[in-house]
Image 1: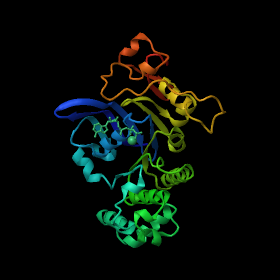
Image 2: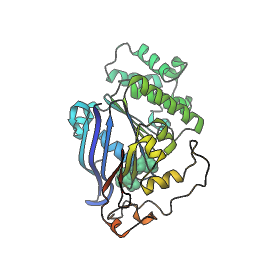
Image 3: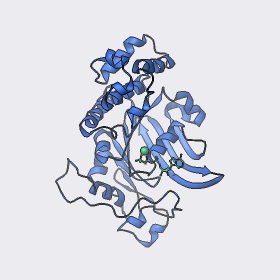
Image 4: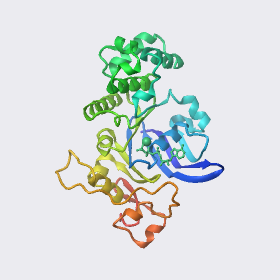
Length: 314
Ligand SMILES: Nc1ncnc2c1ncn2[C@@H]1O[C@H](COP(=O)(O)OP(=O)(O)OP(=O)(O)O)[C@@H](O)[C@H]1O
Ligand SMILES: [Mg+2]
């Protein structure tokens, strides 16, 4: 199976008033194979959106980016290279569909603009078929509507339709269900999974909701304070989490696939991005902490899982 995306040692610093004052990404490594889904999960502020933004080449000018991003047959991509394929070979859907569309243009006008830029022929028929494929039963009415006239769920379906117009190789979905209520969010998740099965694009699925990530992902990467702390096949990470942070995350959420037990919150907070982190960033919240945790943890292989921890043994 060929690799669609490989991210190696991705680091991002922000430079404000000529001073580098935080390092929200501290060496992210990820890989997505053709037609597969990698789910990224982690608490708020851990660097999920920043990872997606860096991959898309959309970081603000105050950001300093290091590391490499390889995409499909293109090899290592510069920000300039990425701009040339952004919106066609690699597309993205965002958390809040209400703010992702321009309120003063109809959906038809906005989808037509994208289709024209992608060089799509027979645009009216293509848009109708695309909207039907995302479960919108009255495409004509949707095309004539303005964003405020549609529900959040319908708008999110429109955004998925827009992102898939160019038949991308990779779709990045950043919290696509977080702004929706639980039932609609679940329908959108099911839709995304079925579209991926049918159309074969690879996906980077980002969420702080472990259950949503587990539902659509083949593999999972758990991020903490700008680093991947555990990665592996989704069912293994969910059923046999190895890193103390992953165990804490899974122990803190209700799960439909497990017998009911007591939910336990992880004590403490994610370190501020202004903290100069030395060694394992999770150490100060970790009940397994030992003296060596103040040094950079090794990557330990346990079956198909990789875990960044001093205490976990192979
Ligand atoms: N433009 C920016 N300038 C300075 N710092 C930034 C900027 N954008 C993001 N950051 C920093 O990067 C950190 C990671 O942000 P990011 O948006 O990736 O978090 P996230 O994991 O997506 O969180 P959430 O679950 O809330 O969406 C933030 O804590 C923030 O301090
Ligand atoms: Mg985010």
